[in-house]
Image (cartoon, rainbow over all chains, first blue to last red):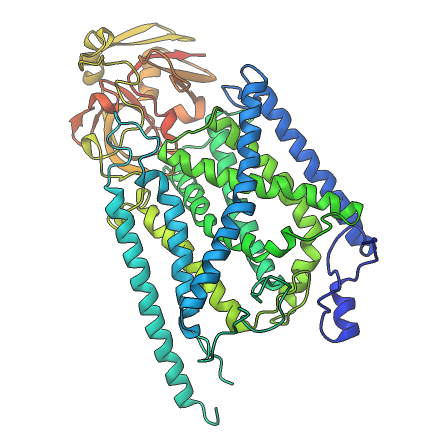
Length: 187
Length: 400
C-alpha cells in the first residue's frame, strides 16, 4: 500500500455529503500543513518525554530508592512487565471479551442484549479487579486491617446487585418505551 | 420511528451485525469513530487527573527544593489521593471499552504503510502499555501485592511519564479526527468502518458507565466512610483497626516490638530527643510531654493507597516543642522514628508546616493513649499530610 495524500474531515464531508468510510480522515503527517506540523511536533515531544522517563528509571532520580540496583535484572523485570501489560490486554483480554460477547449475544434476545452486555461488562470488570482479593494474592497476614472483609461474599454481593440493577433497568426501560410508543401518534 | 431505550423487537442478524456497515470480520457497528472519540476524550481527562494528583503526591513525599506543601485545607491530600485512586479504578472499564472499540485498527495490515503511520504505531506502545501498566500496578498496590521485582513507587512514577509521552503523541495524531467525529453529531465516518446509530452508541456508553459505576461503588467506601458498608470489594475499611482506624506499618514490621509482643527498650524508657540547630538540646520523657499544654485536632490519616480515616488527636504542637528548645529560624525539622529501618523511617516538616498549630506530636487518639500499632508513645500527625509522612514511634527531632 503506497502513501497517499489524506483528506481532512471537512474536505471529505463537503465533497461527498457523508464522510467516506475509505477516506483516511486523520491528523497524520501526510495531511494538511498545520496538522502535519502538529503531528510531527507531538511525536517529537512525546518521544522526548518517554526518553526523559526512561532516563529517570535508569538513574532513580526523584525517588529515594533507585529502581536500578544492579543494572540489567531490574530493568529487564520492568520491561518484561511493561510489554506483558500491552500484550495481555490487546492479544488476550480484548479478544477473549469479544468472543464471550459474541457467544452471549446469540443466546440472548436482541431486545435484552444492551442490558445483558452492560451486565457482562460490569461483571468482567469486577472479576478482573477482585481476582487478587478472592484468591488472596499478596497482602500481609500480620496486618489485619489490610483486607479485613470476606471478599468471596463481597464479590458475590457485588455481582448480585449488578444483575439486579441490570434487570431493573431492563424493566424500567421497557416500560418507558411502551409509554413513549403509546403517547406518540402515527408511530 | 420513535427513538427507544431498548432495541426494537427484531430478529438478530445471523451475521452478528448491530445494523449499519460491517468491517470485514468485525461484525459490530460499534467499532465506530465517534465512540472511539468520545471514550478517548473521557480517558484523556481521567488519566490527566490521575497524572496530576499522582505527581502532587510524589512532590509532597519527595519535595524538591522549590516545593513546600501547604497544611491547609487539612483534608487536601485526603481528597487528592482519594481522587487519584478512585479515578484510576474507574478508568479500568473505560480503557477496556476503548481498546475493544478500536480493536480493528490494531489488526490492520500493513501496520505501517508510510513513515508517519509507522511512527504513530510506535508511539502507541507507550500509550497502551503505559496505561495498562499504571492501572495494573496501581490496583495491585492497593492490595499490597507486588508480583514483580522492581520498586513500585519508582516504576509507577516513571511509567506515568512514559504514558504521558504516548498521550501527547496520540493527541497530536488524533486531534483532528477526534474533533471532526465529535462535531459531526451522530453521523458516522472516520477511521473506523463501524457506523452505529445514535441509540446503539448511547446504549453502549450506558453499559460502559454502568461498569464504571459498579467498580467505583464497590471500592470507594475505603475513602468515603458513609459508603463503607456497600463497598464490599474495598481493600480497606476506614473503621477497621485498633482504636477505630486502619494500620499500614505494623509495630512488628517496624521492629518496635518483638515476635512475642515485647516492646523495644527505647519505648520502655522513652525520651524525645531534640537537637541540631537549637538553643538548648532537650531530652523529654513521656511525663514531660504530658505536662505540656495539649491541643486537640480532628485530622485524617490519608494513605497513598487511597483510603483515609479521620480521628481526634491530642498532643503537643510541634511549634511549642521547638520554642521550648529555643529554636529560632530554621529550614526544616527531621522527625525520626524508633523503627530500625525503612524508607519512611524519617520525615521532614518545613518551617511553614511546623508553624501550623495542628502539626502535633500526638500522645492520644480518640480519647485513649496511642496504641502501639498507631505509634505509641508518640507520633507526628499533621494536616494535609500523606500517611507515610505521619511518622510513628517518634524518638527524635533534628532541627536544621
